[in-house]
Each structure stands twice: as C-alpha cells, then as structure tokens.
Length: 496
Image 1: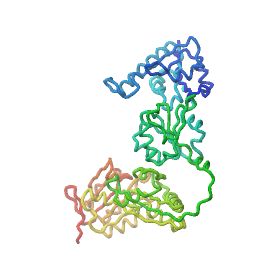
Image 2: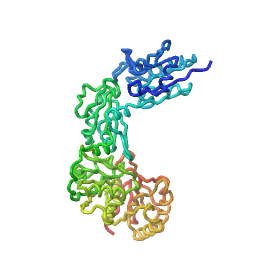
Image 3: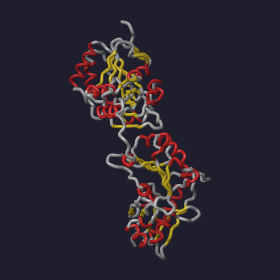
Image 4: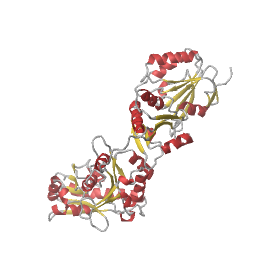
C-alpha cells in the first residue's frame, strides 16, 4: 500500500469565495482534514473551508497547548510549541502511512507566516507534500482598502509586529510601502514605530479583511485594547496617494535648500561629534549608502534614501535635487566625508551644474586613520600620507608612482581600501614598492572594524605582513624609518 499525500492548502483571507478552485477540490476529496485550533475547539480555518467539507471525512484537530508565551513547560513557550508540532506530525504521519491523503488547512497562504510550514519541514522528507497557495491577508487588506500596495519601482516590505520598535521604525522609514502582521499584543509598539518613522498618518489598520466583520480605520485612531491577532497595519503606495490628493494651485518655486555632508566617524554613536548629531537631527532627508543610513538615529517625519556602494554620483544628484526644492538634506559618510567619501562627490556634481541655488556645507568626522592610530598609540605623530589602494577610480600605475614617492619621502602611510574580493594583488605589490625604501622591520598596524563588534588590531612588520589576512574592512598604517614599536605601542617621534 502506498503512502498518502500531504497537502498544505491555503484558504485565502477569510471569504470562502476567495479560495482557489484547486483548494476547494482537494478539500472535498481528501480522506483527512486537519486544522489548528485553540483549546476551545473552534477553528477559523475550518469555518472557511466548511462549504467544501463532506460527510465521512476524518477531522484532525491540532489543538495548541498554549496561546501566549506563558507556560509551565520545562522548555518554556518554545519547548511547548516544539513538542506540539512533533506530536501533530506523528498524528498526521499515521494517516499518511495508512494511505490516506491529508489536507492541512491554512488561513491565507501556507508558506506566508503559516503554521503549515512546521508540518512541511517535519514530513515532506518522508511523504509527497504539495503546497496550494492562497490569497494572503496583505493582498486582501489592500483590496478592501481600495488602494494599491506598490507601483512601478516602489518597494514593499512585509514585517512582523514582533520586531523591536526601533528596528521596525528603521525598516518602515527605509521603504515605500509596508504591511506589518502579527498585531494583537504588539499593536502599541507597532503604532509607536510608525510614528517614529514619520508614517503614522499614512497608515491604515485592517481587521479581518473580506470577512463579514471586517474593520478599516486610520492606524492612529485605533484603541489597542480592541486589536485581535487577525489584523494588520498597512502602508500603501505613496504614489497613488499623491495622485488622489485634491488639485491645488501650483506652489511658488521654493528657494534652494541645503545639503550638509556629515561624517559619522568610523563606527557607532560614540564616534559621532555633537555637531554631526545636531545636523542629522535637523535634516528632513537622510541620503547615503545603506549601511551608513542605518546608523543614523530614527526621527519622526525624516525621510531616508538609502542606495548601493557604487553610485556616489547618483546619490549626490539625488541630494542636490531634494535640496533644490527647499529641503534640508544630510548626506552621510563613514569616517570623515572629505576623505575618500561623499564631500567631493557632492561638490563635483555642483561644479557640473546640479543643485543651482543649493548651499553645501561639510561637517567633519573622525577618520578611520585617526581611529586606527588611537588604538596603538601615535603612529601618525609626524608627517604622513593618506593613500587609497583601490584602482576602481584611478589606474594602478598612478597608485604605484605615489607609493614610490611617499616611500622615498619617508612618510608614514595610512592605506585605505587595501583589498577586496576582486582586488587581491594590490597590497602585495604595494608592500614590494615600499620595501624598496623601508626596512623589513618597519612597524605596520593592521586595523580591522575599528569601533565595531569585530574589531581586531594587529601590529606586525612590513617584512612579515601577510596580504592574505587583509580585507576591505581593514586599514593599514605603515611606519616611517623613525616609527617605533614596543610592547604593542606604536609611535612616530615629532622631531628629527
């Protein structure tokens, strides 16, 4: 006798007519219908599927042992739920071993925050398992609200309300549209996150979408004590909202705003200067490379524009365009914005005619070289040279010529961008150039992720430096002939 098949069947958001034809057929044909329920025995999933059930089918109630995180199980809530899923899988396996097909009902879509996935991961390796998708609650909420989720190049982010409010706020600020699920007890922190992201007034609350008792309200006006688990917060397409606004006279042309290019320092908030913090707080828009934008504390009403690492010119133009409409814009850089960073990119675009009438200011930050030097002493205590080994924007021939000149001039060198996944030979070549002028005993500081969670500071010598141990997150300081290293302390005397 062959084993039965396991079907994870998505029922859609609640209206039985929104179930797929395939789902309805499988429900009516299956020998066993399984569904999750609380201890009271009632099941939302079964009530949705009821029009398609038939007499004689076996019904397996998978009764949750707990509905909150309070339990006396020795393994806590997670232990209780894990045991429940193991037991449920064994019960379904008994039917499958007997050759009976099992349909496990799942509200919405089985693989979209659905309970079915826990049975799938336990049983799909032993039995044939088929997943039948369903309309999600997110799509249903958008349809009953009558607004599209996203359009054209907009980004939709789906988030669980169980995230900490600061993290939720950061993600909401960085997206165009969003759906936040798993409300209920999390509602207050979710609403707080929308407010912190400056998007509370644009968000809507949808409860039991497509049900007879559905509820739609502005998120800001909802009483937290009335919020059930089957609800979500929706931030729909901003483009559609702007087109639905009443037509009003065109505003007078705004005077040019301001772009402030701000240095964040090499790592966390402790490296941020008070001046930089003040400028970030005052800005209406934050523009920058994604990981750097994520380091800026969230502020209500502030819009964030994150982008990739290799689009400096595009980023600069975006900032200038925002400021040209009268906005106050902060462009963020790690370290100091004037050292291999965004200050020169912004000023270059101004020279090309972008941002007419826009004021540009630069707010300095602690450089990576300064941070690395501070960890070992004072290797930059006398004349030094700052040089990038990246040949992405300049040919290696120029880099080699400058290395040779700095070596001959007996300057301490701070080497940025020493290596990457695609640049694996430059550091070895640079070491060979410097060894023409320096002894193999010259101190070298290899500083990785200074101020970060993976900080690692090593003091070696030019002769013993192993380029294979260096990556893009490192900065190197190569001493001059006068640089000294004793017991991990490195310094360059100020006098000759």
